Length: 60
Image (cartoon, rainbow, N blue to C red):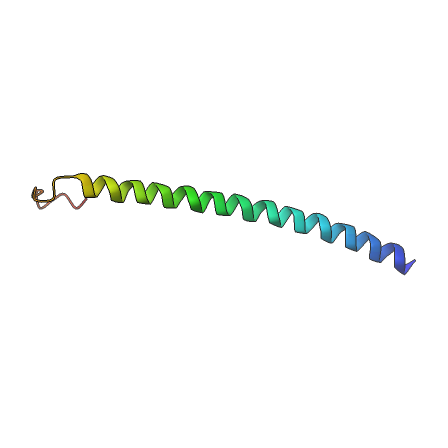
């Protein structure tokens, strides 16, 4: 009886590990996309005229 229970727990653990791996991959992809977006914004900001002064009420 114990062997059957252990085998079931083992299989369940394997499925859970696969689910966690997929979630990790999704999280890494989201992070990568976010960093690319931030880099794009930084590059756009760098391309703007460096000497151009903005009005005091525009923060970005």
